Image (cartoon, rainbow over all chains, first blue to last red; front, top):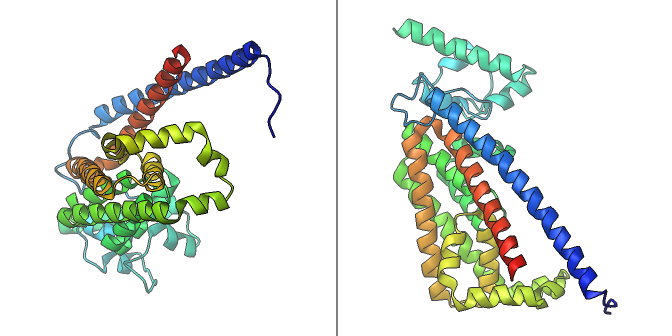
Length: 128
Length: 194
């Protein structure tokens, strides 16, 4: 079934104005993204995050998606250290995500990550 | 960092190369997860001593190439019937689609190569190449070159920037988005002039 033809000029004008709206929205989006990009770039340069990191272990932020095994490797910890200090009874340790463990134990993620940091600091203090 | 990346990262840490292969395969085959970010993350994990960079590169290239080929062959063998069945007959028969397909079939090299760098275009070009029955030899050649380049670029960035990969990945993602938006705007303006 075909739709009846509209006035070609009216149809063209309608399409042209729609295209203009799309172009304006895209330009606005590009401007927002460029501004965020530059801001992020500036912060990255200030904090040194845009440089190649030679010394890794002291700069890494622990995040909820990380596993205990990964944290052990990053911070050069003995395999069972975090399990003993934080009294982790999970059978899957060290192959468990921090966020999953915190959720299972009903601990706030941020608080749990704070405990992990404290344990690492304690280990480093003893080691040095 | 996008939600899907934070969901996938633990799998990468737990199942290592198997997860990397699975993710790159699925991303090239049918589901638009961002493989570049995850390749970058894997390369950064290699820098930290968790992965081996050689295996990261080999596994990512294999996953991407096999995923692309699966997409291409399924589209080539069953694509038309499947798309007709789900009601896309009009799209497939539209002059605009025919024009895009004809362009890709006529000169597939550059389009296949460049589309490897963006997950949505990768999936779309695999589908169109299969539907349009682009010569398999040509397809394999250009998609392999594209995938190898893509993996080497993202892998090198991840490995060079090491633990700062998240900042770099976010900047690259945003930069690519800006380029895509500008390209669309230019295309719309040029079309208007035509």
